[in-house]
Length: 405
Image (cartoon, rainbow, N blue to C red; front, side, top):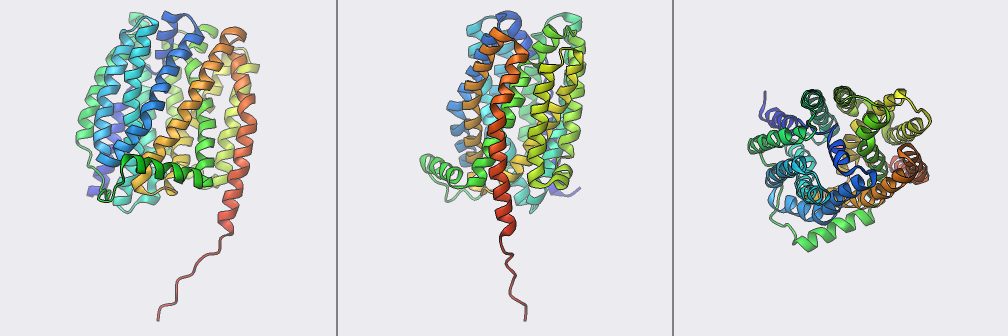
């Protein structure tokens, strides 16, 4: 195995260790059990995302300024503390405080994760492999999460203590810091790095002036809003509405993760089949269909739609991030990703609390249908603009090199 393959393998190990998330099927159930309100559950989670709004861009700037390993290491420490605090919480204010710490960790992890891999591949002259390798990294994450969901389901079914999944997971996250130590910082020329304000200004200008980047970011936000809102309510829906046991929930989540992992591993191949236009259309139509089925089918059969949601989850990150990274230079990559994340989090805070309020009045399934109806015209409009950008690119004349004498 050459040095480049070893570096990529270490990134896979980092992803595996930091993805052993026992809490995934149960964190929202833990909060809902103590708060007894879907609305308060979304408010608690909105504080998480509000924290990210405030700190995601500074974290991205720090990643571009001081390197990817530094922000990944810091992120793992904060993440571990936040998850532990959430597991020990039982009141509204305790959940708020723990979510602030948890969110700070996520800010740093987001700012270092994808840029680390992309810059490493550029250094290895393998930038074209990003979608394939990111797909593999996400597959590792999904498969590790699948194993964690089974273990978590078993722990809760035996002990009847949901919070143990968070407490144990926080200890696993601490070990993730050791995997960061063995990563090798990618070489990015920082000699001419701008000041924080100038760096942010340049990143904002790139987003505003580049129509393809803006369209991709907005479309990813539409998909992620659907994915995330469904994820918030999934465990409550399965336990309260469908009366599934904790072990059944863990096993279902494990199978969801396996499907997501399979499709994220095949993201590069699937994107190659569908190409730019159909890849985005496929993900969007699949999401809207899933929301419609949850509303129309009031039985355990509706659980099958969650496999479709995990297909979208597996595909959207490597494909859309691959498109965005292809349009952005290395010196501003973390900043651009931070801007995209901030835009998403602003929308999450608004949409999630609104949907939580609607769910508390009209019902969970009805709130999901309203969300689907709201994002449909937005998604169609963004697909139209993206198709125009793809057509414009395809019409560009190919520049031929001068003949060799």
